[in-house]
Image (tube, rainbow over all chains, first blue to last red; front, side, top):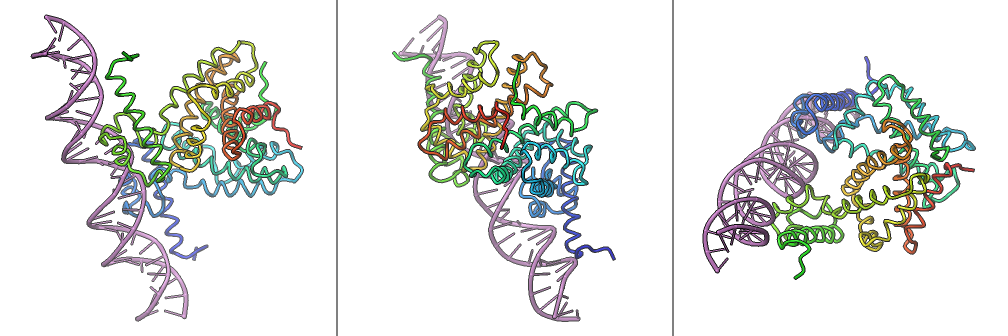
Length: 197
Length: 197
DNA sequence: CTGCCATAAGGCAGTGGGTGCCAGATGTCA
DNA sequence: TGACATCTGGCACCCACTGCCTTATGGCAG
């Protein structure tokens, strides 16, 4: 009666989520290093071998949804009007992603707090940003009509992501705020050229 | 007759360099994953256990000098005149570091090419940039008279490092160029606010 | 130059992440 | 219901990394 997909697929989805959930919970309570893959597997009621069929490494389990979010961002970017200034597109999307079912702020806070606390996860997060930066660069080069080898599209991608990271970091430290405003401010400052005085 | 330090210390320095050199050479010829710590230790003529007495992990051996360079950059930063715009200080220092005996461009090229090619090293490199970013933030906050929690010093640190990374990346791909000009251009674009049109 | 101490180096056994391979269980579809 | 694809578990294995203990070696009195 349910079945958007076969039983097999639904079971896989459930297993995947169970593993990710178990990993997140254990990392939060016990710490990353104090949690073994065997622990996670046991908590998710699968064999350790199966853990690695779903995630290539221990840290990857934390970023289970990252792929989906990334897809979503790229789709939104492609949909922005052609003539729009790049930083405007990027700022608007930076805010728009947050109002998706994919990302709720409470969970995001938990996740980013964990990432901030655990160097190993920070590494993985950086790697993720690296791949996103590559895709942003392609998009920016297209919009600017410049080759991928040009400094400008790369700079836009790199600095906007850096600004976004900074925004999430300061947001993490100010419990009451909403993330969107931090993102906006960061990108506005960037657009103004970071002039001090 | 030589002896800026005792025999013991000199021997340690030599061992450290030998390990780093062996690691770099092996990673370049054979690839990072195809090189075991045992291989490196054998090439440097020390026991595998000793490798870990000098470097906490396999990837760290590649960034042997990083600590010195980092120290040097911070010293240069502290020496910049008080009133100078931050981006000017950072651009000038970005260029100045390159004319040190610590960094010659040929070797830097080898190293960065390796880092670009090996994800594991890329991770470590990112981690390094993270710590530098923290220190830059402290410096920027001091200069701006703002608290560490403020967006601006963080943004300056994060985006300047991002710009520098982009500059080194494009420099890597254009064999003839010198790095300083790439760095200058990147930071100038950043200061101009990345306006497209 | 000699013995004593601090420390560096080697050896060894163990933990934990990650992989290849094979055998058995479980959806899927004719 | 039976043949097939695929998911899962178990096992053996590699390698990065660590703790602990022993052995070598430089530094330094006397």
